Length: 196
Image 1 (tube, rainbow, N blue to C red):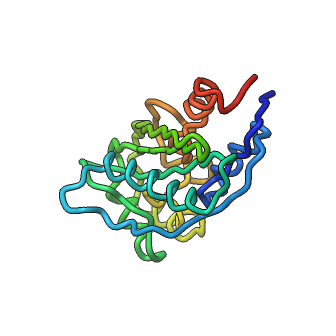
Image 2: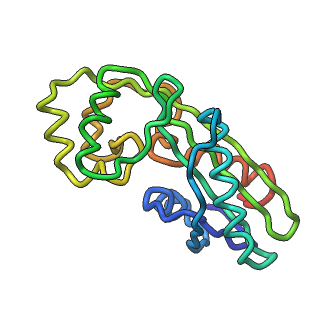
Image 3: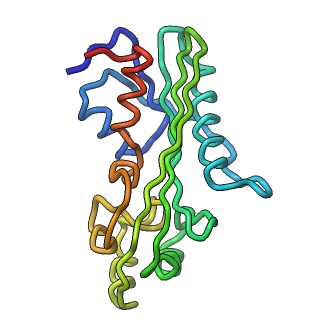
């Protein structure tokens, strides 16, 4: 469907992001780099997500050739302007789910595209609103016992078993999964990094 004359590098170990690029038959490989993900004092969630996406991308770009294009992203869950991170242990899952239970939260994904040859940067963020069902503690506890929530922002997977937690979404579903692929593809096309 798409033609590309440059290779993409996905600066993310996320299986969900990998699957999205594979779905569009893009030619890419994965290369990740470590960065400090500490929230800076007074840093707003959207600013934090944008900063991390950019830092992830630039860290990887330092090790690449000129003909490559980096795609990096960071997804966060935000409740009442506070970032709900990934659970560090299984014991963290249920309290996170209880905080989100019956409430509306935001999922913000920032993505960063960097053209190593022309040093061009694209940095964008997409926000979706997610409303959780009001569930009994027993239901939340049963989900919390699964392996699924452990590496997910907000301790749930909307594309997995955790779909039962969600009452409604306003905005991009793909964004909640971890990459607003529909917006990303359009950016790549608009900037001639991809052709139809």
